[in-house]
Length: 104
Image (cartoon, rainbow, N blue to C red; front, side, top):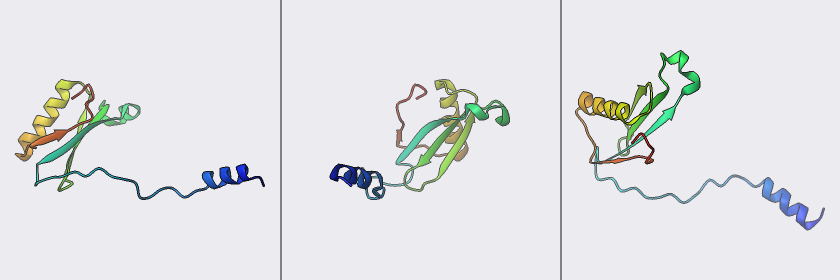
């Protein structure tokens, strides 16, 4: 087997890298940093009473999470869902981190 073929085989069959560099996140306490995103579930909307999306929010320190079903992912619906979380649990974050999507 040529050297080039051997390198190709070794590259293709190399084990997946398990240790990759991670960004540090400094959190000072509960409700200091929440992360939010909208998950699209359009293929399953018929089985979910017309809900196309799910707003997911997580407290980074405690890993406590919320999931609110949404019929659309426009800004008004997302704000309404976030207010529901703030009102029902009487909690709100100091910082809210998102992916800067149109819905936020």
